[in-house]
Length: 157
Image (cartoon, rainbow, N blue to C red; front, top):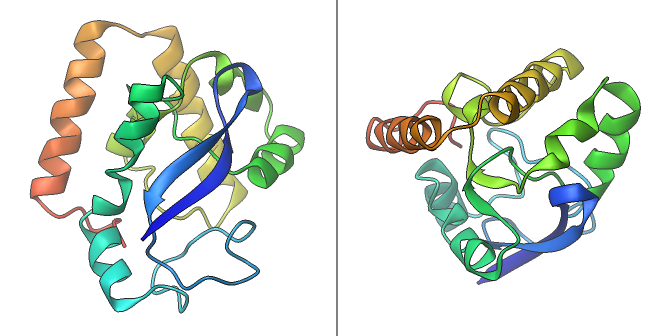
């Protein structure tokens, strides 16, 4: 029912990120990023992912202090290791707690990243968010996230 995966949090601290299980258990679960129409996704998991309800248990991570509601999305450890070598300033996104939603997600950088340039764009937005943080900005991000959820964002899968 639940899936937990080690992710990179604030200041590079590792934590267990909790989600509803949406995929079949296999050896690639921790290393391969989910993609649209991923054959590992179960039928119920497809519904959870399409509605973003698989993210709901991350509020437990917020209550534990590992995550915030708004912030850069946390990446699995392997991706953090890979991207830190490929993207300049990648580790700056770990100056704050990771979030359930973030500025990158509401500005078109949600879902799978097929090209490194897409992740570079996401990281630039994460850094912009950190540099321009305010309570009002967080509120705007939460509202835009809810609007995307109501409108059934096409990038949700």
